[in-house]
Image (cartoon, rainbow, N blue to C red; front, side, top):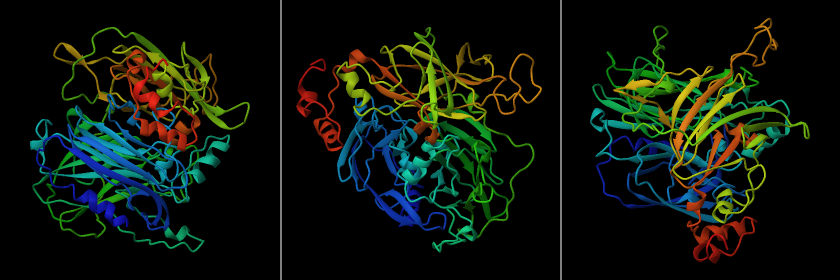
Length: 568
């Protein structure tokens, strides 16, 4: 079964010709099955019998995605990075824009992509389920208008994931949420396009395991130029990505065309995407390692005896599966700086921000339960609040102008207002934040508020994207600066921070959350409700409202949503 997934990805290598807008229908059967992506036979939550089922469309297309939930637990599907303008109810975040899809039930997501192109992905947005395989690439092409289509000949998708052998996501999530040490689950392996290798000598229970499990292979032809669409679809893992002997030219970040930037290595955090152009210019034909090294320093507790952080695939000029003998470059490596990666073009936001927000958080044991939780504060709105997904979706309460439920961490903002927010990080670990329904400018980063905008002519330009890593704080060692704590491991030094800015021009209920899945499940989430006055005209399709009843959520009758004023 697993071969079908990678075969589907390989079929995308040839560029699709320009196409007019069309209606594209997809059916996703979410189900459980057995597979051995890293050689170890394990239970998988997948779609249509494969891992990483691809969705590929053109800009302007309308999509109809029917999701059949064949699991014995609820689910929902989010289309990561798509704006869902006018179809806010199709964003797929359970408890925010929809009720979860009940076991045995179906839901159809109808939406369009009129004004976006680039590299996205889809994944389950319910109780960490995508960690077990409910995820895949979502590519939106615009061959006629993308700036670099003439600069490459073929393209590949490169999807990076961490992988767990536990039977279900609940087997990972429940013990983690019940603990008080905040130690995130550590994967057994990492995968590139659903292929990797586990150390089978560690298997003691007789589970079938192939120590020479096949790795993904990318065939190169000398002289050709390849676009690699790199997607980090991991639950937590940050990868340092490179190809031995092959520099990469970055041309896209999170669906935003960028200025060309040539590097040797890219640090890619969970949920981020990059497109790079790689020229097949090896002096001698052979095989070369593609490397995605997991940064194990981000895990609270890491056992080097299980996870091999060296995740690999093969770049082959000879169509051979033989393990390469190439070695990585060790000197004069050029790394990508995501905080200064400028867009290909940008209209600067020049007006003053209507909202200047300060967000901070801490992940500590809850006094009431002694379970580790993420407590989030936004000055003027809520303090030390650990998000809980409400039963009635936040969007539905906003449409009806109802009071939002406690612990939804809602920040209301006016339509078309400029929102600027500084996210402070007291944790020595970096955290990765994603904003639904928008892209944002990264106007500051680091441990001090001193970023100078990079000029472009006479106007400042900033990176644009939808997912960004917030640097960790600087830890003060014992005997540190006077006047503050000097304990090892405490952030007595400078806090890490990122300052973002966006225009709230998409009415709806949009999450801003840590995309380290375990931290989101601990409550590291806030919700922007933008343009509440505009939402009064939103009509959620009755068939979606009917699904709420089947998932145990009581709402007004379906006809309410299609005919009556939202204030009724």
